[in-house]
Length: 154
Length: 71
Image (cartoon, rainbow over all chains, first blue to last red; front, side, top):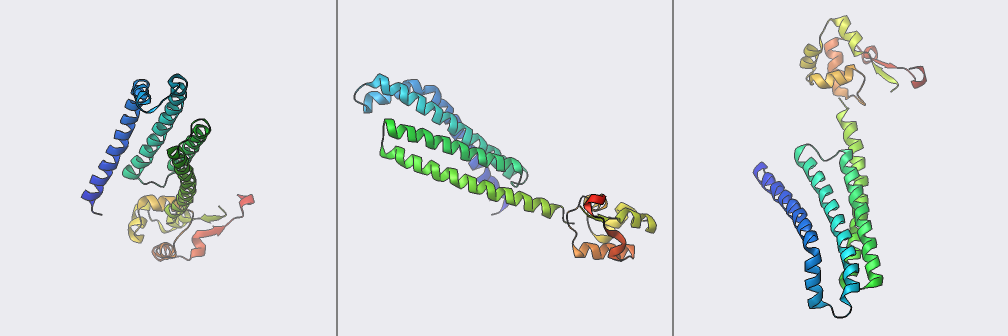
């Protein structure tokens, strides 16, 4: 890829990450009203009880997503500015993995309280994402070691 | 590390500076400093060859083995 193309792609990805973070915050701020509105449309039965449960689940989920997006932003900034093979990125990937696993646990709780097909699919996706990030973190760790060796070979 | 590079001693013997040597062997000043201060983890044969050629010495003149417990 030429320099212009790479610059365009990196700005695009940066824009998407920032846009997702902003929309995450907006959705979290408007959650008390939007959830009420959506539950009135789609949910029949005791709304008050389920409302509190969904509020807790969605807020924890929102915060975790914000955390994951922020770590992704950190990794992407390092790719853009210097080089990605630094220990900071290994830590960021491990954090993403832990956050994904925490999301997995939230969905597991939701399965027992109020199950749906989408919850099961999400649980599976976040479990795979967590494993994927752990593997990637280990690969990055090795790459950092190789890079340090290479840099100190004169 | 048990392998010590006595590059500074040989450079002093040949009365050659860091800048001049780095120019002659074709590596950067920063990399030669890493070598001189024994911070390097490995040395390429091509670099060693260039250093020996310019300093007119043998690898044994600049490389020395000292066991870790004696350092």
